[in-house]
Every structure is written in structure tokens, then in C-alpha cells.
Image 1: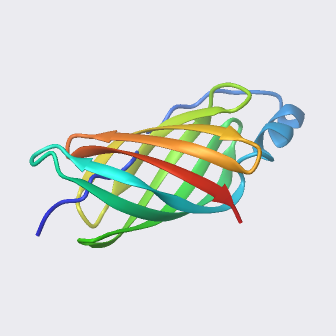
Image 2: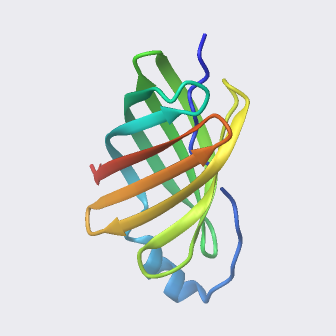
Amino acid sequence: MRIIPAALVAVAFSMPLAATAEAAASILGSWNGRGTVRLKDTGQVEPVSCSVRYEAGGGRTFVLNATCATTAGTFQQSGRIVKLGSNSYSGSLYSDQYAVSGKVSISVSGKSQTIRVNSPKGSGSLKLRKR
């Protein structure tokens, strides 16, 4: 069975709590969408669809849980991200199912976001919309 690349990263910064609540409003909740993944070993590009849920993790940190599907099957990922700027986040993801971790960067614009993932197994890019 092929291993599907997972998007993943973790960093922690601190910020006053009042400002954190405002900053979190843009990413908290459920998002879903589509994109592509490129497997490093074969160079093959596959379509992927994901459903992602973000929850507050304390300070500028957020916890995410994702379910993604490709033609090879469905996989789960979890991770932590940190708010870097007004609309940017960075962190890590891990898939227990495939024992693979990687880095993720997220850019949010209103009710849409772009996710870029890089791991030893591959890379990916997704566009998600808030549900």
C-alpha cells in the first residue's frame, strides 16, 4: 500500500488573551475542501479532499484534526499550529495511520484558506472553505 503524505507543524508563542480571542475567530471551527498531493517516491500527483476542525489550544496555539481522502483511501491527521500574523499560521501534523509527520503553513482570507504541506513522503496544497 502506498503511503499518503500528511500535512503537519508545532510552535508556541504567547499573546494577551483578549487579542488571542479576536485572532482565533478567523480559523476556529470546521473547514472542508480539495487540493492535490505529490508523492516524493513516484512524483505521482493525486487529488485529495479534506475536512479539518480547528480548536483553541491556548495562547496563539490551535489544535487541528483532519480527515482526508485520496484514490488510495482515507487517512486521519492531527496537529498543532501557531498564529504567526494576522492571517498566517504554521505548525505540524502527524498521521498515526501512516506514522508520518510534516510541516504545514496556512493562509486565511475571510471564509477561505490555503494550506501547504510538506513531509518526507510528499507535499500538497489545498483550498478550504469554512462550513
